[in-house]
Amino acid sequence: NVFVFSPWKEIFVNDNERRMTFEQTLEYHDLLMKTYRNLGYNLIQVPFGTVETRKQFILDQISNEIGATL
Image (tube, rainbow, N blue to C red):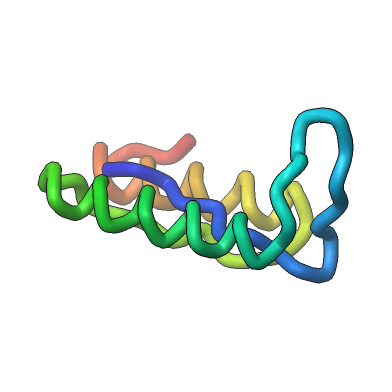
C-alpha cells in the first residue's frame, strides 16, 4: 500500500524546493501514480483536509489493515 497525497492547488506554493509549476506538478504526479500502479502497488488517496484529519485517515487505514486500534 502507498498513501498518496495529490497536489493541492489551494495550498501550492513555489519555493527553493518546489520549482515546478502546479501544472508540471500534476503531470509528474500522474507519472508517479502510473508507475506505482504498473509496479503493482495499491494506492490509497489521502483526502484533502487539516493535518490532523489526514493523520487520522492514515491511522484509521493502518488500523483497518492490521485489525488493531492506533
